Image (tube, rainbow, N blue to C red; front, top):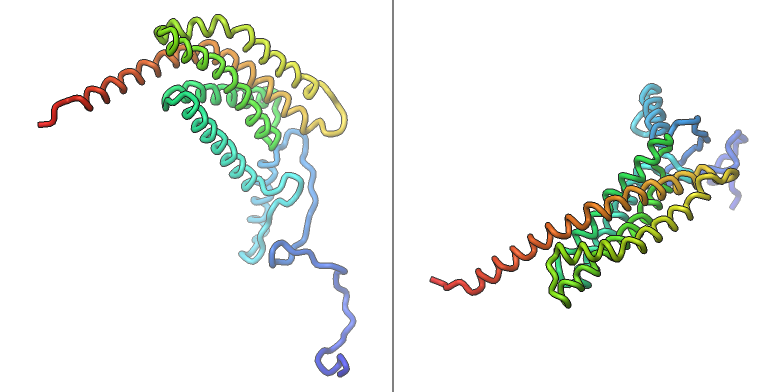
Length: 253
């Protein structure tokens, strides 16, 4: 059967290939960020131009590149960090057989995050995917410092029957040097990421600055507020235990 029976052949000018996103045909436009402009700001500008051009509902735009969809990336990063925090809380709760002490350890995470954000803001760098990687690294390092204190204090309370105040004070004195040493080693390890130049500097610098800023702030918070929070949470835990014990042995009318 000849093709002319089922089709009409006419010469036209068409693209050699048609790209698709899902089931929709698409066209790509490349862009480069101007100095000092973040990807989120560029996305806002693009959406504003789409509105000014009067795009219909049939035409949609999406950032597809090495950075990907910034909105989806941000949502994934939030879920990733939240999942890491929940996992750490459950693990520490099983380790110490207590629901309160993990809160003391997790209290170091906000300070590390604040330090990373402040460092990026001071040097006018956007919070990108490397910032998320730095957050995950800081979560582990800052938790390690708090675990060194809480683990020693809990052991002193159980074995030597020290009060929470004496236990955390002794832990702070004996564990100060290893905490400072590991924090300084991690911070110095991130310095080459900041001072090195060349290809990939836009990825290395935010990572290094976020790590150094988060480590410095987390170090101060670990040695100042973590012992105080440990004492407060220990008192709350003891009060809850006493109330539960009294309620258990109270006569039933």
